[in-house]
Image (cartoon, rainbow, N blue to C red; front, side, top):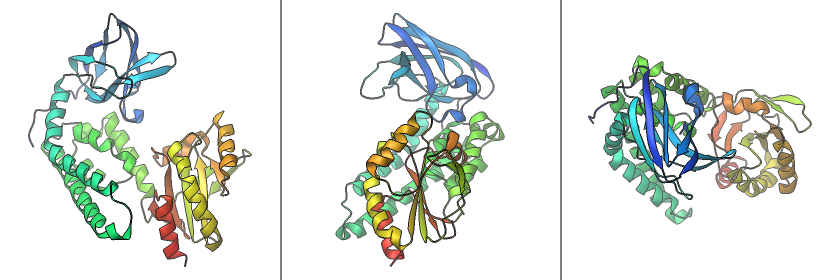
Length: 364
């Protein structure tokens, strides 16, 4: 798995010159991933578009995954697919599309490395994609249980193969930032032992970079909520503004689901009918549900409105200033943790059907 490496490790100048299918306006250069992984000077840049041309310039120490977007008033419209910004002069040619992100056709040393890197993983990525199509397309009925279990086992095997390939690449190319960024894109999957294995294979330069240190911090936060760990103390605020602390599972309940959400999150609200059904049946048998929303400011009124309109009967709290989701590195919503009576995490992100099946077996 050999390829040329980008050499942008020391601070160097960059210039991105580009064309876009818009005659004038403002174009912005923004992080493609969590901004905490980036040096602050790369959080946001904007440039004027003149006769369809634009340019950005500054200093950069290592390749950074970025995106282009157009600014209209206070909104960003259209997005490019992500690309690596690197040191030196690089060109872009972006055709916008109002329905999907499009390639900005950026060419530089890091993107040349990325093409070869992606090619090395093409076979395993294709296999993973095909397996997911098979798994998701299969009805969840007893007759399919054996076949689905086989596909899931094959998917786990291919996933582990991919992780091993990333680690091997890092060992062969310790100066490359690509394995680090590849792993950073997986952080919303929760803690993976693969992260620590990869970390041991990275160079000290990569580890001590801004994305390296941020990645390490995120991984350490994710370790706080792996299965078997006791749920950390959760300082929250109730609907009246009173501060309290959720310390593990509430007394008297065998299992407790802690659900993180917010009031404009459609996937979150899509879970409510199923959770209400589970709650009505199993709350009298020893199940509790605690919801923690990240709504703040003017959105708190909407939070209260959704709770009332949906008729949610379980305790509701707010994560003041998003301190919990930051401390636990919760990046996607909904995220939930199922706790046993001692407050230990036994499962994560159970859908209502899976939660019902679990409680049916455990709370007989």
